[in-house]
Image (tube, rainbow, N blue to C red; front, side, top):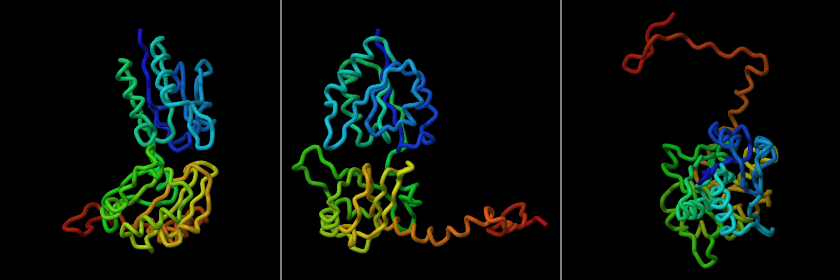
Amino acid sequence: MNGKVFLVGAGPGDPDLLTVKALKVLQAADVVLHDDLVGTDILALLPKTAQARNVGKRCGRSSTPQHEINSLLVAFASFGLTVVRLKGGDPSIFGRGGEEMDALRKAGVPFEIVPGITSALASAAAAKISLTHRDKASAVIFLTGHQANAEEQIEWQAYVSSGATLAIYMPGFNYRQTANQLVSAGLKSETPCAIISRASSQEQQIHRTTVADLARAPRLAAPTLLLVGEVVGTAEFAANTEEFEGWERNGAALPQLPAYESVVDGQFVGGD
């Protein structure tokens, strides 16, 4: 009798950002194979009867080979267990979820995907950046600075020419090289960018700069994400207007808006 595997996105780290369905699946799990980046606050939500195993991958540390993770998923499910593969962010974005789906399909194991908030969205929210903007960017590109094949080249020119906001996962620390590649591909050196470290966690850090000054950026704690594009500059305007957010907290009454009943031809009508 086969069990079932759930590929679940744990989100960026804050347990409040788990989806309701993710929480329900976790609390019904028999076995949880989780990434190294999944925090203790989220693991604390697992039932006491669940077997949890860290199968995460981190640079410079020993890790569980992907083929072994695939085998564990199939093996546990074959015992009729509810198995959760818990991944940071979203399981379908740079998380090797595709390889695990292929293995489960090949073995005939039923599975379901429970999406999570991916790092690009959490990082943009942390930095108060809209990834799209009618006047600045009509598209977003998710890409990774870490290639499985070291000889594979990132198509910087295609990405830059699209005019899209670039969300670069796992950008590494060779910011000088990244900046040079972006400029060589045609991006203006004054283009705003931001490095977000550990988005949504208590250790969250944000460094705003430009492509020209990216080489001098500090080495923030991993995991980091690099946002590049004109939309990043809108956060500077937001920072200048944050003083208005404290009106009510400071005891001052919020301004009263006039009451209107409807809008006709673009004009407010009715009310007192």
